[in-house]
Length: 338
Image (cartoon, rainbow, N blue to C red; front, side, top):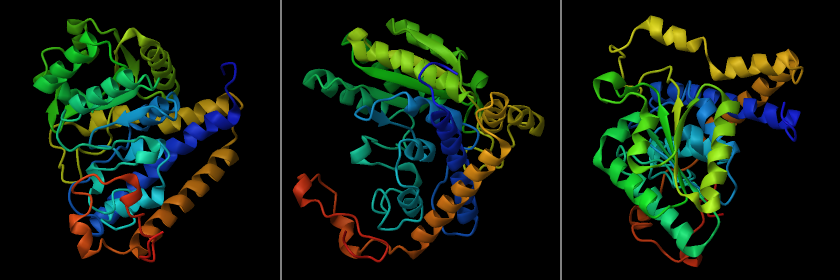
């Protein structure tokens, strides 16, 4: 354990990862029951990346992420009840029931949400980092995307501009080895994704995305470098999603043996074992965390089920950005405005 690292802090990482896991499992169950519609991309197996990365950021830093965004929303501190309500399409959701699974956002947390178009959010993150540089805010932007986004034009345009202007943006690529159902070696001439940053003279490294502490430490180091004005940094987190690309994925493109092999490196189980081995938690402690997480997830489902759908006049709300004072507060679970 490093200097300044507390038992509660480390146990908190375990709780966050377990919360994401149980939340996603419950979301899958609710999808199967028809309570959640549209697409649903689960974050199961990748929890260490979101928890480790966001643990290393400052509260005033900005986060822009891809459509597999539930884990980042929860790790950033968004209310699980309102995240679940958004998946249900309810008015109490974080995006008032209009965004669904792929468009979570929370202005107060500087969490600018998931984007459904692969790689479409990279230029937005670069623009947001330009604003931080221009206003001298001292904040940085964490931009998260999958390895599939590194083969499209906006990826290269974004890295080029960020490097040219030395913008305060940290690019974090979650390489889970598959873009939908296509293995990385069938889609990318360079499979060690972090090496792609060298074309723009952006420093980069690869980190074990199944280790919450390795991700946290790597993001902390690179974030401070970016914050100091030295320009962008590129991190590749090697990870793996245990379920398919989405709930509609039959998973014909990979073997059960491969999935099982990666499951042996489950970031939650291995971190729990490490906590016990280090004398930082007992089995009873971990079970207490599990029970508390179960209560939170069950409450999130109850809140979502009891919340009202968006009102018909909300169809035209938020089409254009209104001044903060003119924005109506989100309704409560009873349908009343807070």
